[in-house]
Length: 322
Image (cartoon, rainbow, N blue to C red; front, side, top):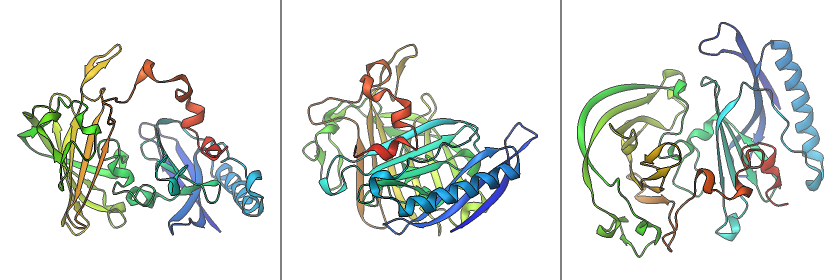
């Protein structure tokens, strides 16, 4: 087991911070595991915390399964978004859970935890998880969720290319929830019943990883077609590290009223479709179901799900099978 301590700077602050990372082996899928924390004001504090953390990892490896402790509380500068994904079907992957935490300090690498049912405890993944498939059986990488490009802004450069019109579906109904009956197969394209397509004004943005991470990032370039009115990424072209055309991503949205903010293009749900040009495969992520029900947001969310400590905390992921 090895660890390292590094210094980093928070934008807008003259005081540096310290963080540590521990290489804790590999998970059952062969992916590198890293654990650590950030936000320390002194190097010595980070080293002491790392030493204690390594001792906990050693104890955890020899503890009975039911006695495994939750992930330790971390000293950080604060998170602004957490993304919780868990599997209900198929049965062999049930309870597998993926948690991504993005930090207010956009120079700090987002944290990624994976709960593995067979081990009955969670693993902290390395920053290489950006490019790892979610749950290993999905076509989406971690940076493909949330409507495309889920990465932190500090790791990327962007360039304005041009302004153009793009044919898009921004008044999607819930017909996409009935798969595959309401799809034009085998391509999986939208049927006319989904709604009316229209020409939308878009900004074309070229997004590329900065040089320091370019050699370990899965995409060499991401071309984003951004709606000039709603700022939604209506489509994206993805290129691999050798600049081969790799994937096409199309996002169709269902507008709905968001309390206090009026009509929002994303509030009613939608679908993100990915066509993999290299592996000749497709994947669709949609929020509707076959009964035309869609997701709930804000005050309509059931109370048991409106729980930050339960669904946005690295320790809570340990309780998936309890």
